[in-house]
Image 1: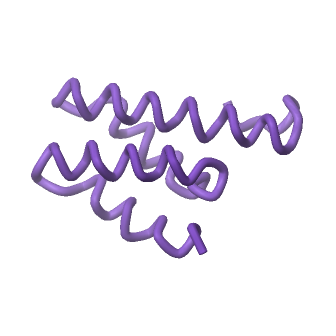
Image 2: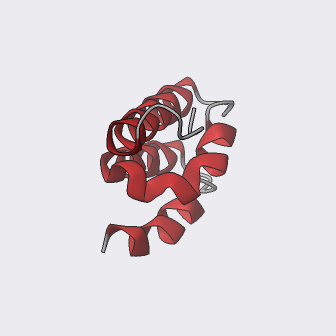
Length: 79
């Protein structure tokens, strides 16, 4: 399932090419709550030197957290 893609996408967040980091952030965001194991790496990308990576990471974090809260209620501690 989707969770099996998370480790490879987390690895891509460390790539030298910013366009790959952006793509990995976007893909993780689309996975929603299944991407929760990637939250620490996405938080690091929110401070990336490339502003495009920063924006993509923040959007992914928001999407993952919002969908997790919708599934599990607001007391999940994901934010």
